[in-house]
Length: 74
Image 1: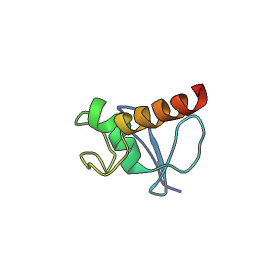
Image 2: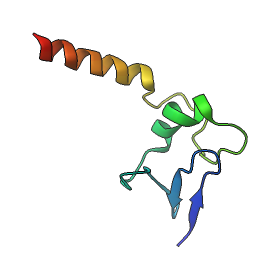
Image 3: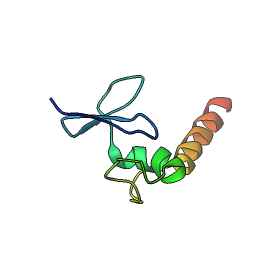
């Protein structure tokens, strides 16, 4: 078993599969890059997807939350 831990954010890869911290569920490197690595990462970041623009970042998530709140408050 090969385990890699990012020295910047402590994200984990087990046998090259990213797992979310806290939930230990299979993760998505592109989502991690959009949410964390591209905003807060530095040259120690080990995420191979760092710098991609395909993941859903905070802007999309905030839009979804706003829409859900609007529907709930009606």
